[in-house]
Length: 242
Ligand SMILES: [Fe+2]
Image 1 (cartoon, protein in one colour):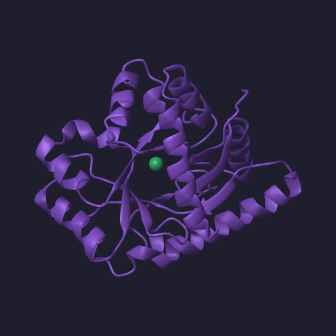
Image 2 (image 1 turned 90 degrees about the vertical axis):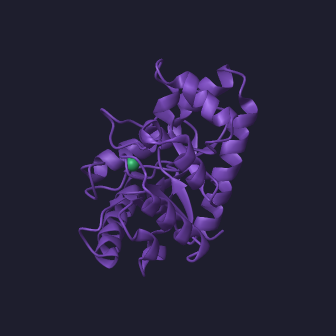
């Protein structure tokens, strides 16, 4: 694929053996190479965090997976995107009050990729997100909004979106005939500001950022592509500590 722009992928499961994403270091390298070929120059590694383990245990596992991958990348000596560590943090009741929640933010930033419940959001969900933002100073990035949006009333959606949150959509939503019109609308209306691939492997859930951006370009949404890229790259720089 020929690309003339550079992108940042906000959401991926590329770390080997961390979750239901890449199963091996080799698969991780293939995902990174494919991402790079599509113009991705920065990528957030966001393995699922579920409270079945402590945050510290998760962080140790994540560090070990990253070290194994870095070692292989040194041997491969091929260009790949810069990687910044993060997590896709599953919502659970009380999460907004969790002591060590900040450790799960994207790199050194205050942004946190948050996987919201796919059931209707209760008042407790709204309160917890509000507490995350106002008391903890975390900026939640709502992961793949298209997964949970159909179950929400307009009222509850507005109560979440009026907080200091950002919203991410999966690139694949723009590539399916049945959903791409709605995906474009969510971008045009400003509901969604960020794209991620949520890539897991090189088979069923491949990296597809270049395809989604090319689709937006084809639809005349060059400005949107630029805005998504500028915002995601600025978050990456902050997270990476540049
Ligand atoms: Fe994900």
